[in-house]
Image (cartoon, rainbow, N blue to C red; front, side, top):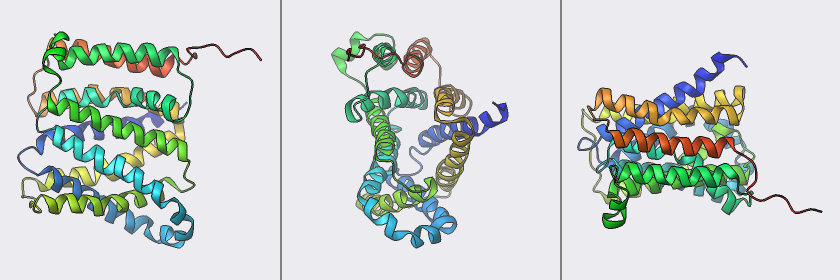
Length: 297
């Protein structure tokens, strides 16, 4: 396998990590509703310029899939992004990056529930290990504190956002929509934009300042157009399994960027909790032996 092909998903993960930090930089600069709406409006316009005509020509083939594409747009572009921007108001970029690393594990759990896939040794063991690591992280090294006080609002919202995106990935796999990836993404975005517009207007249409414009542009172009291109190219060259392992670098990149550009402090509980959480995710990805042996025929 040519190592240069790993650069594509690696760069995509780096951009998504930077976008997590952008979400934190947007706090107090751009309203969550504004950056959510303008981000996807910008991405939708750019993708429409590139793929609008072929999608329109096959509109008869697209129409039966519109309800499912709408659900995907709600999960991936509305719920995940809006919840993440709101979560950034009350949690750190470091926590957001570590929580985002749970998405593959959450997808494994949802696949068992929604797709009927067999539970694996790695899925169960890794899940329990990640839960312990997460509890250690979010409680600042005192897991019992979660029982007394619960998780911080921002951490809980980010976890819900990750669950939403994990559901997006599982449903995308289950439905097997027979459209080109870019065409599917374009329709999903334009299903989401009207909903995001309603959300934006419900917040009295807050303007985007000059300071907030670069954040919107980064979220709308590199994070929403360039990163998916790099990721899809990497998946095409490496296959889904190899490419997906690169997502394990998301918390590493996010923490590094947050330390450099936000001045966040890395504590011992961040390192221990993050490593234990990530180890659980890796176990879930690698230990594929079914939890129960198949019944004899």
